Amino acid sequence: MAHNTETDIRVSATKQIWGFTTGMLAICIPLAPATRSGPILPLAVVASAAIGTVAVWRGNRELNDNLTNSIKNLEQRVVDLETICSSQEVELQRRIQRLDRED
Image (cartoon, rainbow, N blue to C red; front, side, top):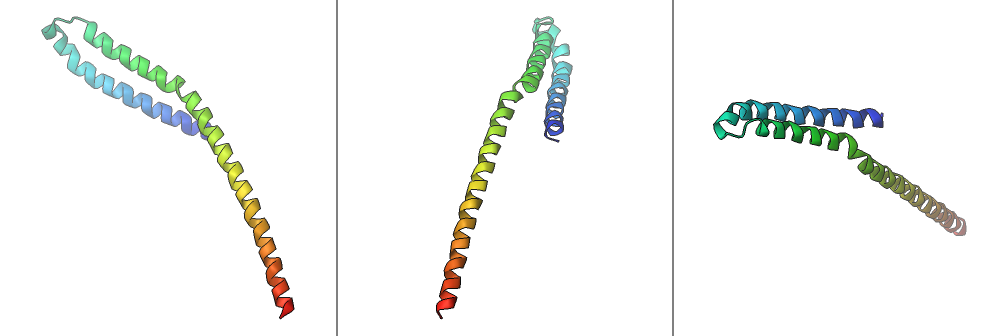
């Protein structure tokens, strides 16, 4: 399930990148002759979108590994806290039982 969610996020980000790229191309292609930049501006837009797409699909691995490690650490801490709380609860119940017996 985590892999599907990760893929969905990547696909969504890629759609947005290329959606904005299409809009920028629609603006810069007619402006290219007016600015005398030739094909440089549209090529820069496409190259930027390609680099952004690669960053989305490759750069997420390290972040995912860090998040996985953080989640494992937090789960272990919760288990430790549950153990501590339950042991103190048992001790508290024993004390209450002793007090009941003394009365």
